[in-house]
Length: 175
Image (cartoon, rainbow, N blue to C red; front, side, top):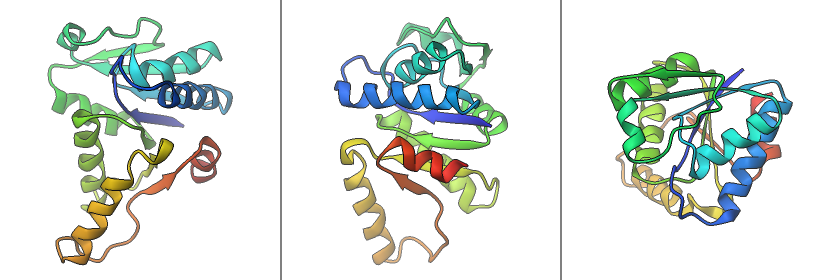
């Protein structure tokens, strides 16, 4: 299974997040899955990729070459696809992935998360989406989404994504 990870590339995040990302990468490799990610070598992306590579797993990085001006790109990927834009990158994530894990991140991660759940709601894919809620990172976002529903901004719908607070829960959903 190709598992796409959305997450921060920041070098400034607390180790609780990157340690969990590394362990997630280890488990992705141990379960024989391939990591699909934004190709970054730092933050959540880099930590997860290191976990995959340290356990002889496979990874597919997808990024425009100019992203290297903002963060270093992972040189250990099994394969790397260079694209021209962030939109093309997100389309390639959907094309090459069987499931999505959203880990803590910033604006780019939220952009990717909301796009992938919107596409699922609009029946453009039926792939598993799991929010990895490390240390309750996403709780305020969940509250906001709940309030949007309570105030009528969201239609009644089936569960679009699942939440997991640990790696074991993630793999229960995936397998």
